[in-house]
Image 1 (cartoon, rainbow, N blue to C red):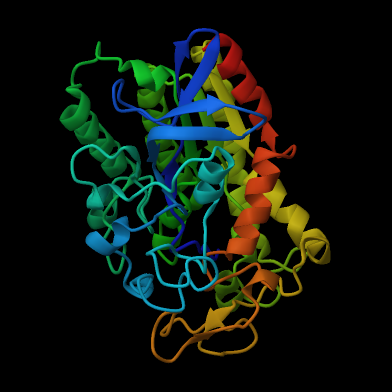
Image 2 (image 1 turned 180 degrees about the vertical axis):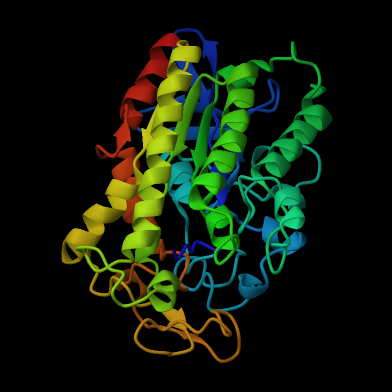
Length: 395
């Protein structure tokens, strides 16, 4: 079975903190008590920021950590043009032509973009991004043990949790081993946990390891990660599922032509991602029972992606499968030996009309559509507006 997502990322994203000033509520994107961002609630998702701090742990939200650590051999060019061409007009180490979902989440709250952890010196007033492109849910040692370390990112979601703990210790004095250390801002923060685990399947493609084995191991690590955050006091958590990974250009390129579903994507890949999402949903249900004081929302990336693929023109998309940036190989503009950012590749002139950016990552336009579905639509349960309202009225 083909499994792709060789560059999908892992993500725990946004933190909102609150303090009371008279009868007015102030929110911040932050973690440490005295360092958190403070925002005055205006209307809906409009905030006025004064000081800020936030967190991101993800794969599709990496804004630069990959550049400072060893990463995937095929995707080491995120710091080269044409990455970043649409919005920033220069590479920003984001694996897209522009902004990512986490950027749109920050924007919706009138917060600055979050800097990558590996570039943060001391306290970051506006937040921290721990995401690493290509990282896994399963610990790296598992891949070493099974001789599957060729061209893979050694960081896992547990690495990002380690970084998070180091950041807390350095800036708040809260040591990871101190189970009683519950930083006040954690329980007043919103954690956005993006998709993680697709790379685990990709790195074991062609091996004797079954998808069931990878799913069980990945979910075990993912469960430990989420449980740790909740035990630290997290009360507002968004858990993001897998997208339709079988619709990515690289998946389409590497799969058999008869392996297609009813919208033309790789059936085996999408079935695998769908099954993994069911496991995530089961976990979310279980965690809601274990931590009834927390609001744990599920961001349905799968259905959001499917909605676009079923009616692309409705969203201004006229190219659903072909990558915008690549070496020109037909039919999907993907050459596994020459990915976007290398000298032999170039980008299309109209990335806003494409779903796929480089064959594995999506365009800013697609990320904007998906983020709107999460933040303003019905593809998050409970809705994002409910989560914010709960935070406003219950603290």
